[in-house]
Length: 520
Ligand code: 3SK
Image 1 (tube, helix red, strand yellow):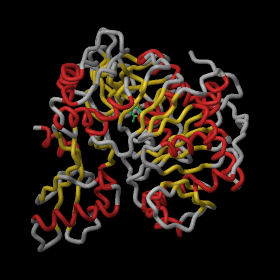
Image 2: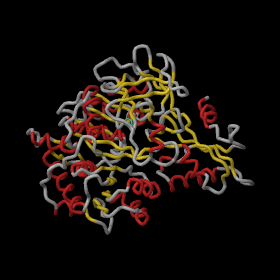
Image 3: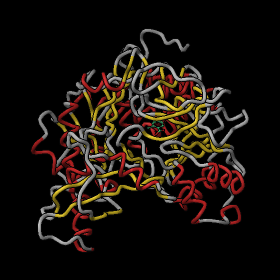
Image 4: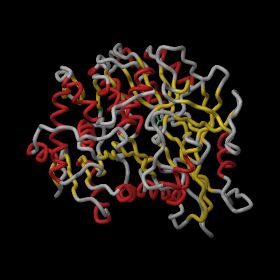
């Protein structure tokens, strides 16, 4: 079990502790040509924390951080936590409609945003009920009439003592797409944040000060936040940040910054392998010691290809935004069976239950995964969702697994309508609702269809309106409408026109039947 003192502040633990321990000159963040030491990171965090306080942000307030993977994202989240407020990193692809819902639901008081991402904030702003301040980091010359990030930092004091937060005070809030279409805010305490590093990372990855974490999961994705913020900083290591990293960027960053622990999703590894089949001839990748993979199921083929090409093991894991990070994984130094996800991570317990009765299944029997440990599910203002996600203190991530005789957990499928495509969680019903807005459609069902590179793709089955023919022009119209309304990764890459949709006696769409049809 992990123990934390009553008064503890995650930001202080991730930065100030290292400076106090004489590690201030060590590099914390590599970004482009810049090397930001722990002492410099502390100064930026302090200035940002003071700037936010000067604007009126108080302990407990929610502050949105909307950035690609850049140092300002880390500075903002840590500054918010250091003053006792709650950091709410926002996925950069979100459109005004989604931002409006999230920001109003969280009742956020401020938004800190990269200028390249300010447009959707401006579009949402007239309907934001609680936001008093918008702070823009102007990096591309985008004109704005908000507070300027650099000016605020320059004017603010560089001295800041951490707010005396308690271990169960909120530190981080991440929105997750459920199957209902309305995102839910998963909230996490200072203790939760630290425990992801002190359990899973400490034992499964065993980071040292010499490690350089790098990769492409976005920081607002719980997986990215852990891999690229909490883990490197907890262990006095460093992170190589790359904005919108392509496979080539990651290989280049590995050579330039000496990445030792690569973090990506299976799609990311497959793209690196297919786009750069001779990567070891092109780049010096000798610094790599381990790869982390999550976000979607890892196939044994990808595991073997990465091992053969880069000479490293891929450590697969499953986590959820609700649990903040990985709860099932192998350890890097044990024999990895690539046909299984691994064992319950240190501090966690897992079991398989019958989805109907809740009874524990026998080893070898498929059922619903239930987990518990140092992190747990807590939604912001959504008690009805809390009940669905937790049973008797066990969190139910919604995946079907088998626990083998040797204790390893083997992934089978999702138990609900969430589509997992290239690591993005996409609720089918949310896309359905938007496709239905196209006037030429009458009925729509959206499911995941297996795809070699992306794991799954979003597929829409569409019954057209009376007298309308389903043709390529209509496919394009549907796709563009979804791209314009929701985050573009949610658009249906496949559209099939059908006469009717399979329904239950009570009229519910039988998505399971469509999913099964796709899998044949
Ligand atoms: O998708 C996952 O497996 C995952 C892993 C770590 C943290 C969060 C998530 C959703």
